[in-house]
Image (cartoon, rainbow, N blue to C red):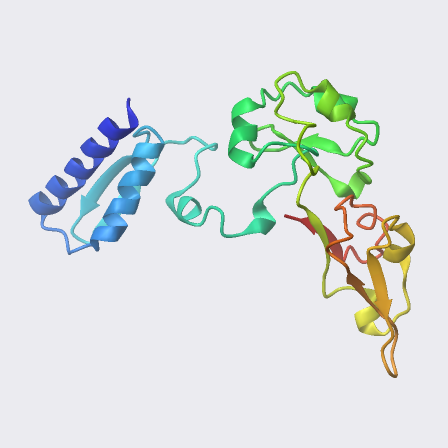
Length: 221
């Protein structure tokens, strides 16, 4: 069904049901967002209103997010998976990627894995680092990975609170792994040197992730 046709029917359906059953008032902006949600997923969700409020009965399709997830999309970068280097933006990547697995099998570092939900390739830095060799780019038949892009990605490493240095334990494992020398250690008076990441120098290669003894480092967009 066409998006706008579906949207129109969804809006009409909701207002009729609200009036007919005498439900308590629901803010217009919530109704509008809900309509967009239903229409966007091609009316695959059935909505029913009761006197106590709105109740949504949804199809059992695990690939379709809940309304809560839909409203929160794009707000939490931590949830955004790291795609193979030189991937198109997320929406374009999912449109172009056929999930053929050629990039996964071709990666010499074996750090590409399929997502549990959806099957799109993502980077798993617990398995190793990205060397930006472009083997995955060359293996991609649909140009979902475009080597013409200026940067492989915008991902950067981040150090969390479980870092040993914050517990006064001397550890420079991450710095020893960083070929870009993006990890610096600042001397602390009466304590151990604390690591910090120069974001302009960090390539997001993930070499520092797996060796960290407390898994305090992650690469995020």
